[in-house]
Length: 344
View 1 (cartoon, helix red, strand yellow):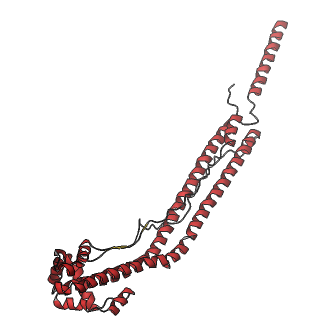
View 2 (spheres, helix red, strand yellow; view 1 turned 90 degrees about the vertical axis):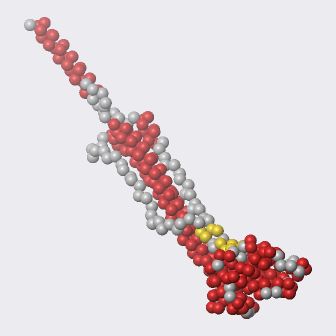
């Protein structure tokens, strides 16, 4: 009986030891895994440098003489001395006589210096002269002798974009309401990292907005400068000066060759005059288009600024979300280490 009592006492001590050991192994850590929290502390949001909007590409207006007109004008100077009419001049005279009536030729050749000056200053082309000009433009053969014009263009399509930032998704993994010592330690690491990411995002968003504001602030003054630019006015005045000089040079050469040209004289004078009227009238249209292009440039610049702002903000949001997602994942891992992972 005594032997059996001793055996039961030994077994009781062994069970007590086992239970003690189990209780000791079941205790939770008081801090999360430092390897994980060190990685968490190292997370930062990369700095996104705002991209500047590109200036709209503008093609200025241009004027050039036609190849046929250049050939004719170049040949006029030799008529008086040679006593012969070059083929290019004769061909041009035939083209005029075939397309215009005698009254058309008389009307265009009666245009006065005062009328030309008025057109050059932006005035309208008189109805009788315009009727002749329209007839010339409608005739492919004669139209080939008129100067060639290129209107100013603003490259690309004006985009209407709603100016708005992209809302970033700030998803944070939730933990239980009861916070133990280890979870509190994990939160003490995660919360400052999250706060730093939030602050970085705010700073970088402010930089994006500031860059946009600065870009837009330059647009209106640039438009005003464009519309009142002396260099712009000089461009069109230069076109007018060139047209008048070329016409006067041709008329002077024609006057010297009048005896040789005979009936062809009035025809080539008519072609010279109609080319000058067309040039002056179209240059006026070019100048008006040039003024309108200033507004088009401003619209394109505004659209570019809005597009780049949205792109810059998207980059900031993406950088923030990537960093926050990484922080959230490490935070989950850190919290997991707060619970004993062993087994009895």
